[in-house]
Image (tube, rainbow, N blue to C red; front, side):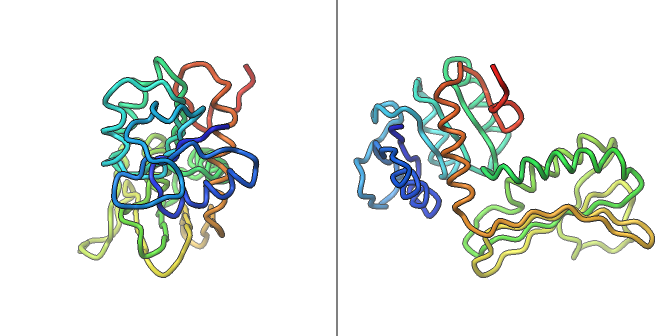
Amino acid sequence: MRILLIGYGTMNRITARLAEEAGHEIAGVIAGDNTTAPYPAFDSIDAAGADVAIDFSHPDLILPLLEGGVKTPLVIATTGRKEELVAVLKEKSASLPVFFSANMSYGVHVMNSLLKKALTMLEDFDLEMVERHHNRKVDAPSGTLVKLLDTALDHREGSYPVYDRSSMHEKRRKEEIGVSAIRGGSIVGTHDCIFAKDDEVIEISHQAQSKEIFANGALKAAAVLVNRPDGFYDYNNLFEER
């Protein structure tokens, strides 16, 4: 594949290396700032003539690029402003294939599926969610935890999130879903869903031990997406047989 990289931070540097090791070509980069890259620079997605664009950037970069017509298939891993971004991507998917995931790890998709099952079986358990990331991550909670939280809210009628309990001065209510974010060091990414009841605790946890899992996930999604018809895809439907 000829791949356009949107953003050239840590993740797309890893993506570029793994892509070239796999025999793909980096058609160019849209960096959006003063970042220099050893590839041609472009200001619009279609100008690169790529087979697919992979985005590990920021809503402030990707959203303006989507304002005009886009024909290049898109793999989008940007987090932040999720509702706005997904609405734009679904509009674009009427005329091109688009894949979106807040986390490019297939393991996180499996975790979300396990969470759905657990929610049906552990209705009387308290639920707390915790995510940990490196000290350079700018959004909190992470896009992945937002996705997991959305799943929980969909399955627990009347529930609502409580962020950072340090300001709370009353006991926990049954309808609450606690959400906590930890930032420190070089933690790649850990997400925990903790179900707690009197005398027992059940945890569903995913630990990313290398950023390469996200880059490889994006490349795998791109390889499938370029052969898919126009539409909006995520891990729930991208790999379905056609």
